[in-house]
Image (cartoon, rainbow, N blue to C red; front, side, top):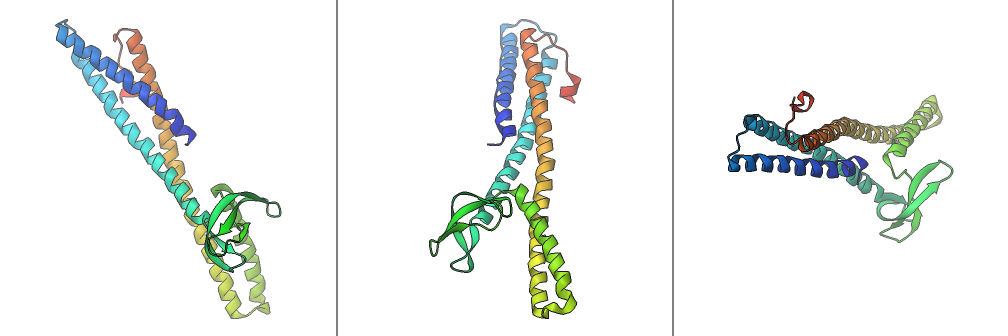
Length: 221
């Protein structure tokens, strides 16, 4: 589980417990008939905080969703590789991690589901290395394409080389777009976690003070 989510989960639980505690105290005050001139303000304040917590949950859930999308997308890509025996892209079973010392990338050790050949996958098994790897391939393709244009290769080869380069560029751009989306949502989720942490501390201080607190405008607004 992502560290941000692991950190948020107990803070959210503590905050909800404190909200329920204060709402229970208010309810007991009402039942007992003890007058509290601040009752309406406190109730509005607690209900507002509860609504805010629901909003923060929505933001953090959005971050959970894009993290799962990232993981699922990467797994689908990793489970398809060019089998050296079949000479085709096949579905593969991931057996473990394997370091490509020549290219200095972290790959998967896989087994072809068609012929059972075990081999090292051709691409990095993580997004960070994969985007760098795509950039290197695009650079090499561009250099080869320039050389090919000098008349050393046929038009058919040039067309195939350009097609391969465009394919890699599309892959890279797709991953960069996902990465940008993840960054935006992660920043929002980080802000939500910090706000809920402040909310928890605010409610805890209110509990220690016996609910005689002043509205924290930074939390309310």
